Image (cartoon, rainbow, N blue to C red):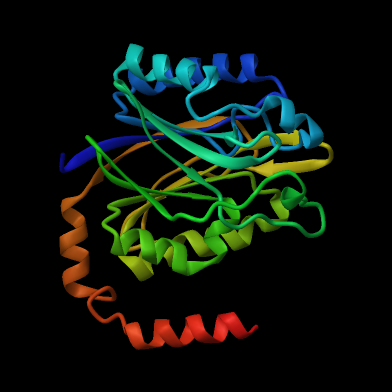
Length: 275
């Protein structure tokens, strides 16, 4: 499929209320389908909200649990694909991940566990979540989709790995407060341009425990141009079309992937181990 229609669905999840948030995602999925979207993307931890602290241990579910089944039904009923964030219960009791699930009309296609967990100032993710270890590209009827979550975007090697492994569209779901707006608007454009890849960034809105989230979800071309952008601070749904044929055209004139230097990457690996 050369062209797909992507919906960015930024909303304010109800804190620690999975039933309410599933209902909201169902309604927004129907709205996205009415606008002829093939894929609808929801924010990080859209199943539960962000500041659940110790309640995460009760809210977390296996990746094949009832909440994923409920979102699978949303995908099936509307014949769309859905990406959303959730706390995932590992096989070992008490071990949970900050995860991203990708489902389609025929069920779960793949999932990703956030690799970089911010734990400084107001952030305390390492207190609750275990970091993931595998960059993830999922083969879907809509193309090869690379998955990332929020703080991962601060580390350019993740997106580069996803693109080298064949990602045509990189998706970053996020819970970013207003103080980090400039960071993410800079990093998303840089990650798209330096890898010549489509990049969709979906951030939440609303307030939890004094943290205000700025929204501003956007979809970027491999040239870093904005295809669609949601409002700041307000719930919003925007839809735009991605044409994968643009990847070849852009990479012909900006061949950063061709010009990669593996020897420098090996040196970076050696130096990073010594930090």
